[in-house]
Image 1 (cartoon, rainbow, N blue to C red):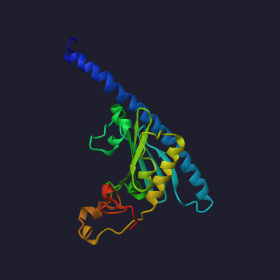
Image 2 (image 1 turned 60 degrees about the vertical axis):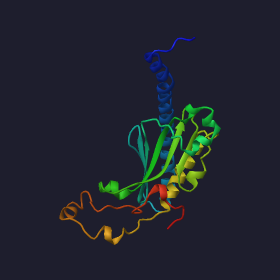
Image 3 (image 1 turned 135 degrees about the horizontal axis):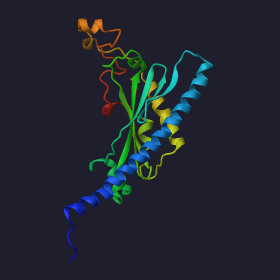
Image 4 (image 1 turned 90 degrees about the horizontal axis):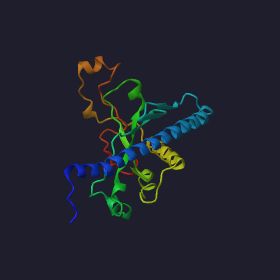
Length: 231
């Protein structure tokens, strides 16, 4: 009969398996995020060059905000790409577990995550800290650089085959273009009257610094319940 492992040996076993894997997933994800940055900067330059021929007042720019964040500004919108520094596993109730790719190799479920949020560019310009942004998509990447996208419209169905899709620059470019197109589909809507019928004196005093009247492209928007129809 084999000797039963001690608690310390069991801890080492788990660290060897999961901790090392998570470190590897993190490194792969940050490599992919670096490629997102390169493609985003190139795309912004290409769009800017084309738009300058039409109207050089339309802002198109890429801003690197550090290791885990960058922005793409286009017209009145900003897309914020943010890489989470943790590694995640999917809950057993998630539909992705129906795939043999995970059933046969459960450790493939550990993924890094890149979130994409859409904000109004004026929210940053005027430091309107109460304004809200909306989750447009999130990209999951595992240790084999397989990936899939949770998102709306084409973002949710173009890249949802986790077992076969591996990330590359061409697909990154497509993801960037799709997030921009999706965000441009929605214009700024007037917020409901009842949400703005009362403001404080402080709100008005601070209006030029950090507007307290919350502004968003679609007030009441919930990503999980968003319709695929443009309203």
